[in-house]
Structures are given as C-alpha cells and as structure tokens.
Length: 213
Image (cartoon, rainbow, N blue to C red; front, side, top):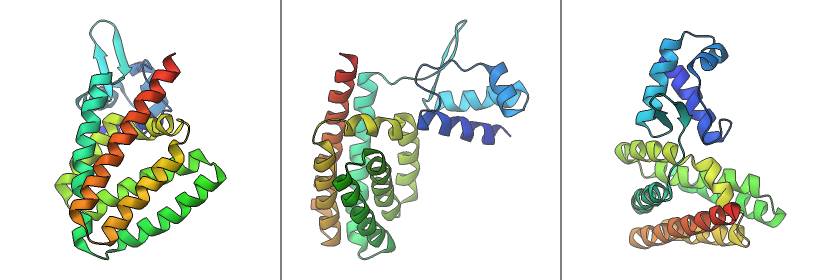
C-alpha cells in the first residue's frame, strides 16, 4: 500500500500535477487515495529521502523546490552518469536500443520541423532513457532513476526548450551523440553527451531567470 501511494505521489510531483511548493496534507491525501494516514505518512517519508518532499517542522509538508546550487549539483551528476552511459552503449555495438534511438531521432526531427515543443520534450526524455537502458548497467540505471526523480526532469526540460533556438540545438546535439554511438566511438560519445547535458543545464538556468524577471 505504502509503495503504491509513494509511486503515485512521485509521478504526480515529477509530472507537475503537484506543482513545486504545493502543500501536502496527510488528511487530504488519505481521502484522495482512500487509505488511512499511516501509508500516506510512510510514503511522504520515502519521498523526503528521495528529495521530492520537504518537511518543515510545525509548518507542514511541501513539494520540494531544488535550489540553484542543488540543480547544478544534480546536473553535474546527470552529466557524469549519461556520459558514462553513452560510452558503455557505444561499446556494446548494434543492440536494440540503438535502433530505437534511430527511430526516436526521426520522430524528433519531425517534431522540430513542426515546432512541436511538447512532443519533442517527450522524445528528449525517451532519448536519454534509451541511452541509460542501453548501457546495460543496473547500478548506473538505479542511480540515474533516483537522480531524475529529484530533478523532476519532465517539467524542467520544457523550461530548457523554451529558449529561442534551443529546440534545433538540442536536436543537433542528439544527432552528434547518436552518430558517435553508431561509430562505436565510446570516448567521443561520452564527451559529446557531457557537453549536451551542460548545454541543457545552461538553457534551463537562462529560462528560469527569464521567468523570474
């Protein structure tokens, strides 16, 4: 029960259905999920450990908002993990994930041509996920899943892609990564993947600054 509640709450936070800084009332959530407050309390403790929920004593429980420093640290880890994943996938050769990446790129190119940022954002998530799965390293993937939950990346990527010209830049960067994976150039794939994550981070921070202005 607690695991199901935690997973549903996790997805609601990651998707933005529960926005940053939202108040999380145990009573209201127990009514929403039709369960007692005990599994709700345990689920919130788990999400606090994962960095998705912030508990303020004598104030309440809220959807966490990463600070700029925390976002930078999370993106530094994202860069390391995805760079390593691209390297490992390149060395594996022509595995099914590479074919799926090729199909992903065709769909992404079409989304860019159509100016469909929402569709492209979904394909970005799939592209990065395929590289991590394709690395075939369960420990790397487990750390990556936790990291992506803390970033609530599905929400952040839309902010990053809102920057003028970022859609085309991101698509070009993905093509470069995939070309190096196809060429079995592990060193090159890792380097370019890390550059891509750094560019995404810069676009995100610029987009966040513009929204605050």
